Length: 147
Image 1 (cartoon, rainbow, N blue to C red):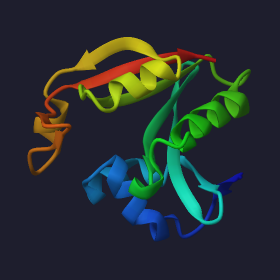
Image 2: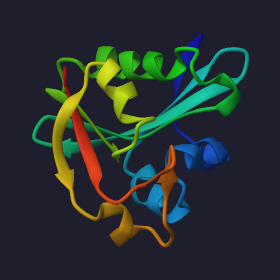
Image 3: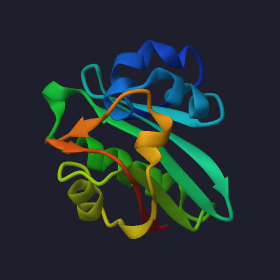
């Protein structure tokens, strides 16, 4: 297993990125200012993008694992990689997500705790309703993990 920085042609991973954030123009807002990583294990299985949000905060803007490879530890490995890589340079890792029964428990299992909520984020910023695990996403829930 190898995790590497993707420095050029990041959009070649757009199908994976769209799993983590299903509107391309929203991805475009952070892709150019973020650092992207890919996890290769006999082919790319996962990608993530992180951004410097100032004040010691690194934000995980997108984390996506290929559907056929989910629940095999790749997402957790990416989170662990980010914590190891950025510990000492940042004080916390943030992850913003919908209040979904699929994603919030994953982040909590990775050591994140609820931080704050941005009301109506998904209804205000996306051009269509977004559903996950049968739940319509409305508010952005931020979780924080100390580094």
